[in-house]
Length: 463
Image 1 (cartoon, helix red, strand yellow):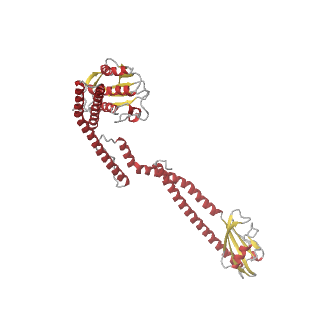
Image 2 (image 1 turned 120 degrees about the vertical axis):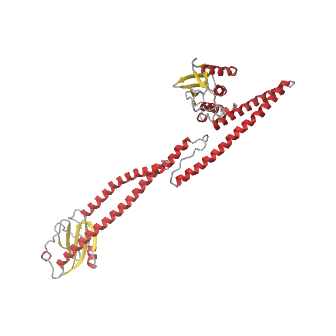
Image 3 (image 1 turned 135 degrees about the vertical axis):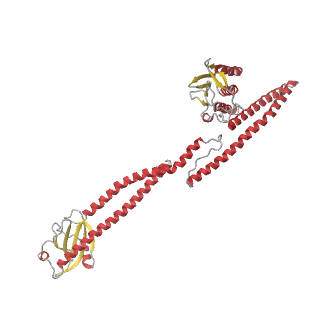
């Protein structure tokens, strides 16, 4: 039950409650009607018993009783006259045996009140309700018994029960539908908050969940979540400002550090160990400087979008220059970089950002991939598609869903260097051009950048 959606659980609870109400109401009506019908039958039996008693009282004995004749009754009733010992003196036609047990006859003869019982009587097809009482006759006391078939009562109760079963089932069905509609309406504000929450991003300040007009629990939940979003937004802004400020402040000391190390290296006169340490320190300073630049770029992209200056570029020439830039590094690893693009394919892009995006993708393929690296471009429906892939196993399953997030790295990549910012920068550059980037799920580490062939009005303005 707990695995069902809350809407289904509310509907089921509403249906169960309706069943309980209908069962309670039906049981009350059934028992009340049964009591009323029994009371009506009992009143009829008392009236007939009074009529029969008038026949057997002293001086009022009827000719039928005096001559051993038969008592007459309607089709649904009968009457008998019994001795105190339970012997049958007279009876209506068709009922030839005493209707009461001897102890019941004795009880009726001993008391001043009437005895009421229900049982099957030989000669009567249905269960009968019997009333017995003592009457003083000329020759002593006798017990008169009047009875009535309960066929009409049972048919009435059975009809009522069938009506409750059929009508109750229909009522539960209708109530369930109404309950489902009410549950849907009651959960509509939560569903609206859920849909908005899917689109909420900390990159866009001021986004909040919609609140219902009623000041109820759902509104208080929405207010609490909006307060949480505000706190997260403030924390995110502080983090972004810190990254931007720290990256900006690190650029100058890192540049000075690299200059001093290079100057020390140029002076010469160092032992081989010292020279090797200086070269390694310069490489580390370069990596730190690049990391600071990447962090600053990411912070600017998140804050106000990357500024782009678009120019008309030949895409094949752009790809060949990017391949040439990494050719030596690829050759050292026994790999090649191939380019496949039409000669006449042009697009309006920012050359600096385009080279940066391609460089990050090629570097990622050389660092984490295997086999030859392929660059391919094509135009499709006004969109430029650039694919960068290799012959390696592709992105790990745990990395693929978050590959374009900041500092996202697979477990194997943690031992190969890199800060996990390359693909995040590619994504920021693509978005700045009004495009997107995705992993192509066809094997290998293929990444596709989709950009408009012509510049768009919403491009970030140059700074």
